[in-house]
Length: 403
Image (cartoon, helix red, strand yellow):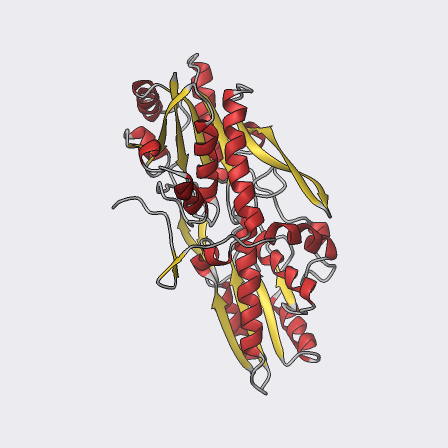
């Protein structure tokens, strides 16, 4: 008999708890697994020996179902960067001590690009020390920028929220007779997947957003103004979707604040373009930053996303305990768009950690202000279906730890 541990890291999503439920359910099926521990606040909980016995928290099938539909990370998260163990071994010793103390033989880390850096480093350390503890990564991020996987859990639900919110913004913007420009700022630090996903509205005959600007294409404020003026010849209310990470030579919207991994906190492109548009065009202009709402809006989650997140968490258990793999991340491999089919496989963590998957340049139009039908065909399957939400007093019920 042995125990396992699981942790959640990075930015929250609407599906990350579904992956936790998948890991838990997968582990329950193994008679060799005794306790299933959850680490508080990611790898920091392992370092400081702050573990929760999940068997005493997730008690029955209703708990699992509620957990799957609860946004954010019930175990808490972190943005903690491990140094290379050759440089500083202290935290690795603490991690190993926690694992040995609790007889933990497999560790599952649910997170994005930076979390996979932790998976890689821990796997290297255990192998260097001759320690038989398997480390497996389970992907998540609304940014969809993790390499080696077709898409990431959490992205489909975020994309569905963005499209739904944009559709409501479109309805709102068209009620007045005066011309207007509405700029919607969407998350995406270095990759424009989420902003690009707003194109799914076309599947229902919606021409907006009329322009989509991504970090993967060159952005010129002057060309942007011309794009808006051209759109105004056809549309009274022009809608612009813009990724927070776009850059241009004039600057003015990039923060100098960085996180533990050196990534800048970006904000302000919407306000920048609002002011710029107002000064040069003069019509009614407003900007809307969707902000953190797009990360955890479980009331408009994608059922496909939630179910796949649970499946990939469950598959991680099989990879570690049956296939005896370590130093890998679980990935989706797309078989077809229509009908939509994916299979779950593993990929070498060294090909994933500290790398980013950019939105394909060939899926951006020649003008650099919109995306192609290939993008629409890629996104549509990921936003399908709606989970059955339990309500109490008119409000969705969430799974919560006693606090």
